[in-house]
Image (cartoon, rainbow, N blue to C red; front, side, top):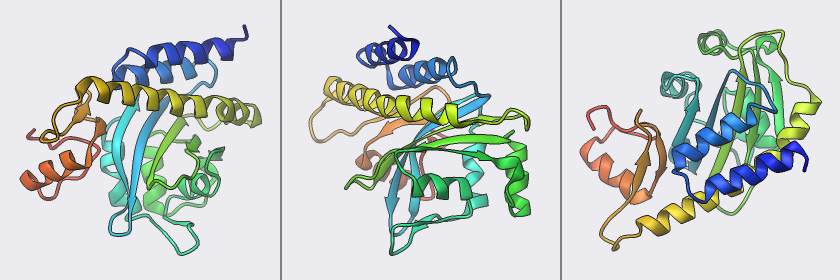
Amino acid sequence: MDPHSKLLLDIYHCAAGASAADLNDYVLSSLKRVIVFDSAAISDLEYSEEQGFMISALHLHKAPVERFLQRREVMGVEKLDAEGRLQSRDVVLQNACAHRGRSVRADVSKLQLKADIAMYTRRFDTAHSLTFLSPRTSSPKATMIALWRATQRHSYDDGHTIIADNLFPHVLQARQINKQLALATLAEPASTTIALSDFHGCLQFIEPAAVQMLQREWSDWRPPVLPQKL
């Protein structure tokens, strides 16, 4: 059995019994053996006309949560135009959105970025990125996998994008299986709602009713990190 097939079987096996956070950890540690990276994130995105793209769940690897807390301040609201193209200051996410279902790589250190965005990428050690946004569906939700390298001379190449294109759709499927199994286990009467987070407060999954409940208590709160007081 080739190494990639073994890796995928192990990920599916993990999906059947692990928590969402443990599965994400396992996925990223496994991917690191075939696509080296310094930091990474798996994030679930939701879209609305009012708020644009919003991160509803987030799992970080070797990246501080401040990276995402500060992102919206730097990038602003990101919305789709009438043709479905992303309007954003984040040119990497723009490219990923234009090529959904395919991995896109970027030499971030060589992009012509606005001063505040360039400072943001340097602050969080992002010289190179490999980004995958799940294929388009009728749902307003999407999943993004982002792998970052901190050193300018360590760029991604075509081989890395081929590996990512082959593996990442399986990662999405494994996470979906894991989520469905977790919800089946946690199923309660309709009067309850569910939110799952890691020990740092990064949401792994949250139902819309749970978002609404938390916003009744903290009106300015937005995912993907639980309110600090909570």
